[in-house]
Amino acid sequence: MSDAGFRLSRVRAEGWKKAQELSAIECEEMDRARAAELNPYPSEPERSRWNDGFEKGVWG
Image (cartoon, rainbow, N blue to C red; front, side, top):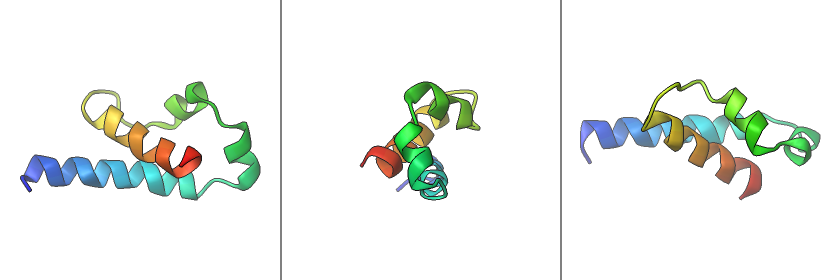
């Protein structure tokens, strides 16, 4: 795996970890607009990778 690929896999893991920190109620109330507000990355490809990890963590 390249350095860039490894870095992006870590960004995805950050998103998943953030989702795991949410309570069950927060997950039930979560929508894509709120998830976008939580994303700390302003540009691609990091933004998409973080979203992917977060969505998998919240919605499976």
